Length: 299
Image (cartoon, one colour):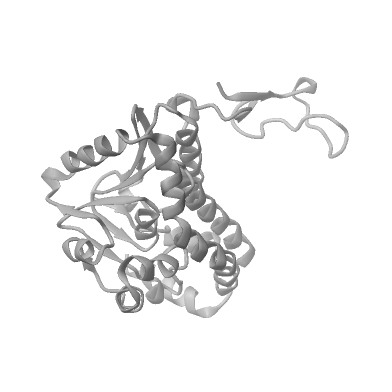
């Protein structure tokens, strides 16, 4: 069960340092926070931006904002991180699948949210990127195999999300694309760190600098995803992969994954905090402001 911190002093607000509780810190009359590393039923977590399901040996995290192609906002990032934490604590879960609702896997950050909340506000963007970084860390360090079920386009941070998974199955009529240099951003939340490892230096530069669509079949040929399959075969292929992974010994698999993560982790930890600071500062400059405004005007 989740640990519950109750309101004290009859619900009266406390002043800093007076020893009294501050009411309504989270939902209703309670603060919900685990008091030990124990999994809970998904419905207890009350997620709003994702659907989190457990059907052992599989857990599934579905990004659930199909009306905006599953774009990230701050709340979604926090919910993905918490779902990964819960799945990592659940010994009945052997494999975690990450997918999207509707016709897209994920198109990265919600640029309208950026325009409203972060342009010209470097400190606020720095906080947002902290949630993005935490989500990636919890997914990569989940301690069990992860499979990206790429049901549609994966753009920007959406591609970085699937790259953070161990394996990826993609529908063959979708594409992967990075657009940061067109929108005043740098894809330094995984792409600049990992693309050279996964597809080689020249192809990585093509993906990041050209900002062109990479069709699913080409993505599979390049090693950016493992399989590109017809949409009608997507679930069967994901099931096949999950069933194979679930048969493996969990502790051995966890340690094998940790070793396989070495170069990714090295590149990530050497660069991510620098990227966080630079991207935050760039939010105060004219280039991203003009680029994002042009993008939103076309919508």
